[in-house]
Length: 214
Image 1 (cartoon, rainbow, N blue to C red):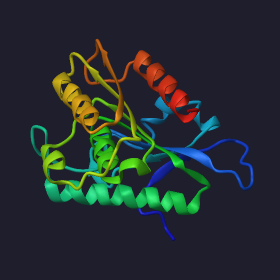
Image 2 (image 1 turned 90 degrees about the vertical axis):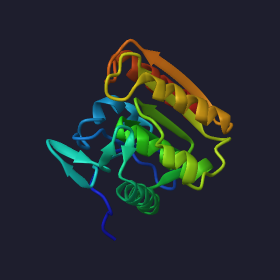
Image 3 (image 1 turned 180 degrees about the vertical axis):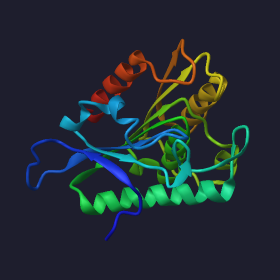
């Protein structure tokens, strides 16, 4: 079976037979690609299978998972299809690699964070944790998507206080929304714009290593 999406794989250098490994699915921002996010998870391949997934749509100079029709409003049909594709890719990876189904993580920046949080809501406790860096949850997802229980889900949500692309308040709203559903949320603000600082990366890395060891 061919992969339903293009991706870059990082994995432990020594794979033990009959052992499963936690996984991180990494989703980039609009106009980026599957290589761009890998520095943020550098070193974690010692513990995890890491799948950095390319968006299927051309968005020069890179790619995108979905298109936008207005400020904070993805095109609904394109967005729905992207979420279905990404969920299908997670299924594909689970079938073809020795993944620990109890420790599946999503990590995304901007558009990748939007998709990651939506996948968490639609897949529920099938996902162990999500790192959503500078994203938001579309209104139609909150209002119309079938939301699964997320009481076992852990999240690391971060946002730049000076983000001029996706407002900081949207990150606060995501934190409040997931907490309201009973998820375990760590929220971090940084004196940054629409970017991931070294401190943000360090905090995310500590969070995921702590979480996977619980």
